[in-house]
Image 1 (cartoon, one colour):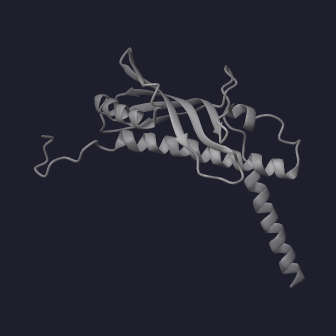
Image 2 (cartoon, rainbow, N blue to C red; image 1 turned 60 degrees about the horizontal axis):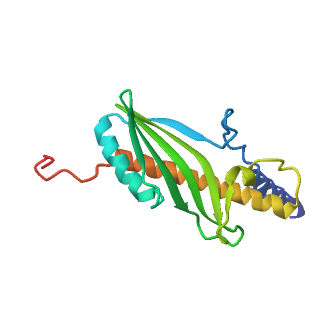
Image 3 (spheres, rainbow, N blue to C red; image 1 turned 180 degrees about the horizontal axis):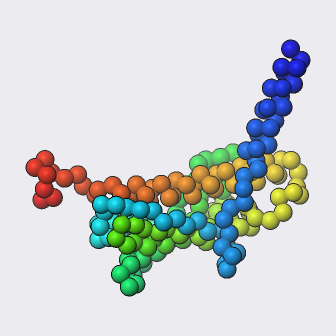
Length: 185
């Protein structure tokens, strides 16, 4: 029985340690900023349709005082938007909101997103660059500080994943269902 208990304790401790040891976030070599980018195929969706859908997405997630910017560069529609995203209420962390700059480039059959310039807003209305919180020497600090850092990193990864999923769903989902007779009008 003692052996089984010890084994369970080791497995549980190993599992919690593995959760804390996330790989480092992707950092742009030129800017030194955490940057997420991906090219997503969109077969069957025209560039014009994606642009219309991207505008709707941008107006839902943008900071009200900063409207989205849309430009066309050599056949590519580029939408740049300052995104504001609430973080889940959390007793362990003082961050309440994540801000990021999203650049979405649209072409026939695909789009590319680039999320960068991440900033946490704390519950005392201060703004902290995510790099200041998540990058650096993680080997120093108390066990509790390391736990809080791992938790912040997990929450950050979840928020970025949610932003990418929301963008993908917005660009691939029709704005309005087709009429019963199969026409758009």
